[in-house]
Amino acid sequence: MVKTEDNKTERIGFHKGSLATLTKEREEMMRILQIVEQLMQMHIKELKNLGVDLVAQAKSEVKKLKGKKDLGEVL
Image 1: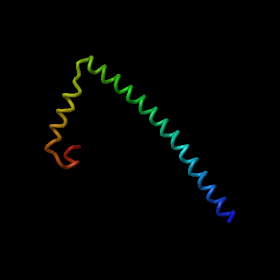
Image 2: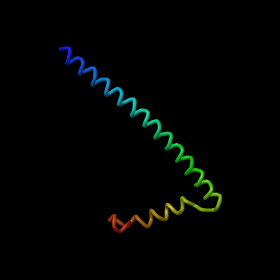
Image 3: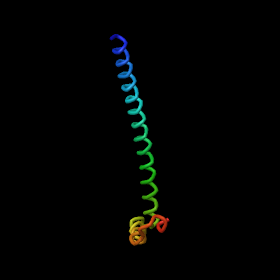
Image 4: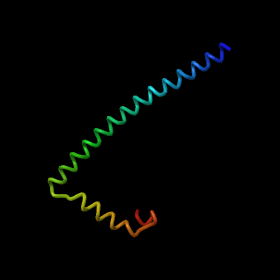
């Protein structure tokens, strides 16, 4: 019976350790994502200052893609 309890304790420890590691990985990924988002916003702001209308370009692309159904046509 002791062996089964030890096995259960080891499994619990393994899963808790895995969750701790994955939590830290997720936090790091969120940090990287925030940095990427900040950089994108900086570029968007500069493009806007240079007179580039990204919203209009995006709407134009959507209209182009609206009639196409096949992925091969889109690409």
